[in-house]
Structures are given as structure tokens and as C-alpha cells.
Length: 378
Ligand code: ADP
Ligand code: MG
Image 1 (cartoon, helix red, strand yellow):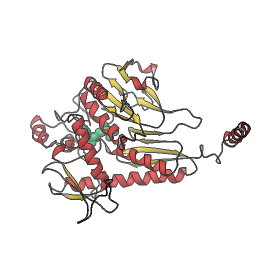
Image 2 (image 1 turned 45 degrees about the vertical axis):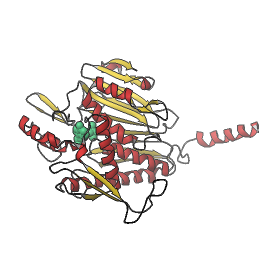
Image 3 (image 1 turned 180 degrees about the vertical axis):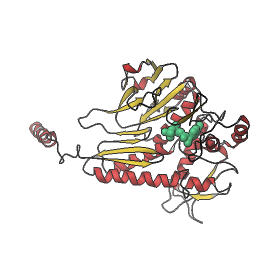
């Protein structure tokens, strides 16, 4: 028996050690996708890598067509122009609106997708010119920022019922409505949700390893060829123009990593910088002392089927909340099944520190040239 095992191992080494296109672990496809307002790069490995990469592109385009704020026929655009009337929406939009409301509640309103009218006043909705709105203008718009006023519903056809497991195989009708004057923008959560769907695509196509970079949302799937973790850079927020300037590097397998920062989209006026993450409490770009927040979580959390979406929403919310509240939030979010924190954090602060939660201490390496001071917290 032992000899057989050794022989099998020898054979396996012989088959995999020589590389080339016959090796399913090194057969690779890389495609660039311009979608959801960002340049994405999807790299898949395995025998079915081309089919998997193109299937990933398809689901991203499908999601964009439903969730885009600028495409006229998207669920979001139709909802925003429905004048408060209920309309039919896709299951994806329904799921995401429910997750977004959950995140609003959890973060005490720091994440709120009904920030859209305020973001538009600053010119961050796309299309308009950037501008600094007046206090009065913001004060008039802030009452519209309240995701709890967004109504969502799911209904089965007349006479149909869910089975005892709470499931229904047929077509469910999903509807949503906003309060009059409200508008939503799922830009702070949609890419993370796309990463959740890519997990399912990669599973379906048997992708052994891959890397999906959806703007600031990364899905590090499996490990790199050769068995080392994927290396995901945390950009130096102080050098927004230099894509090669990093605060540090994360070594990750089977993880989501999502970064939000004020350096990603901004304009300058009278020497002051205004960025695209808005504090719903003030209507102004968040000014919390953080320059970026990276949220890292296990991509296989069975207890959380939308972990990618949560990482995305949390990265935006924690950027708004600031260091102290962000770390309190981290301490309060536990995965009850695994008995550990639900996610880990890398915070970059305005005063030159990189703060890393203890679960990442072994995976994060500070870039010494960045000049940041390094701290871990528990
Ligand atoms: P990005 O999507 O640009 O990588 P984020 O995930 O942090 O970065 O999302 C920022 C986007 O989310 C903004 O462009 C805007 O559409 C939206 N947004 C801004 N502020 C908030 C907020 N407080 N809550 C929810 N969404 C927000
Ligand atoms: Mg986000």
C-alpha cells in the first residue's frame, strides 16, 4: 500500500512538475473588463480557464446592466426615476438593497446608498461638473438620506407557497420603491457583490486558482501557481498618482480584500481636496483621519453568503467612521460559526500610521520605503 502511494506521488510529480499547457494549474486566461466605472482584471487558471474568465465577464456585465446608476434601463435608474412608485426589480437588485439596508443599520448610518442626491450635488454621480455645494443645499438634501425609507418586497404568484425549507422554485416577483425625492447609488457595494457572484462562477467552472481585481475589490482565489499566496498591494493613499507606491503588501489565499480611500476619486478647489466618500451625517466628504481602509475576509464564509458585498460596504463605512469607531466595529463583528472576527483590517491614517488588526499580522508586510509607522491592534 505504502509503495503504491509512493508510486502515485512520483507519477503525480512527473505529470505536474513539467508545467506547460497540459497542466491544469498553469493553464491560464487573463482578461480586462471595463465595467462598473472601473478597469477590472480577471485571471483564471485551470483547464476551463478561458470559459471561466468569459463567464465571469458575462456576470459582471449582467450585474452592471441591473445596478448601474447611469445606464437608463438599469433597475437602479428605473427606481431613481420612478417618483416614489413601486417598480419590479431583479433578484440581484433586491438582494443588494436588503444587504445595503442591513449595512446601514450595522454601521449606524455611515453606509447609506441613499446618499446619491448628496453625491450628485458634489458632481460625483457621473456626468455633472465637480462643485462644492452650499450649506443650504446640503441641508435640504440630507433628509433624503435614509435607506430605512426604501421599501423592498418579494412575492410569490397567487396561491403559491414556500416549501418547508423556506424555498420556492418558481418565479418570485421582486419590487422596490423609494421615498419621493430619494435616489440610490449602489457604487459602494456592487463590486463586492460581483465578487460574491464570481466565487460561484469559479466554483462552477472548477477554477483551482485565480485573481479577480474589480477596481478596489480583489478576490484572491486559491493560491498562486507554485503554492505561494497571492500578493495584494495596499496602495499608498498619500501618492494617488503613483500606482506603484504601496503602504504594504498582503499575502492572501481564498480571500476578499477591499480598499476604500479618499484618493480614488476627488477634485481640488481653492487648495482643498474633496473626495467621493460622503459622510451621511454631514453631507461632506468624510474627514475622519483615515486615508484608506482595507477589509479582508474569508471568501468561503458559509455563514455569510454575501461576504464580498459586506466587505465593500464596510470599507466605505469604516472610512467614514474613523479609526476608533472602525476598530470598535471590528471588535463587535464576530463570525459566530467560526468563533473569530468576521473580517480583518488595514487602516492607513492621515498622521502616517498603518494599523493592522491581529489576524493579518502574519500576512501583511509594511513597505519600509513608504515611511509609515506600523502598529497591530487586538
Ligand atoms: P469605489 O467604489 O470608488 O472603489 P467605495 O466602495 O468606497 O469606493 O464606494 C464609494 C462609492 O460609494 C461612491 O462613489 C458613491 O457612489 C458611494 N458612496 C459614497 N459615500 C457613501 C456612503 N456613505 N454610503 C454608501 N455609499 C456611498
Ligand atoms: Mg465600498
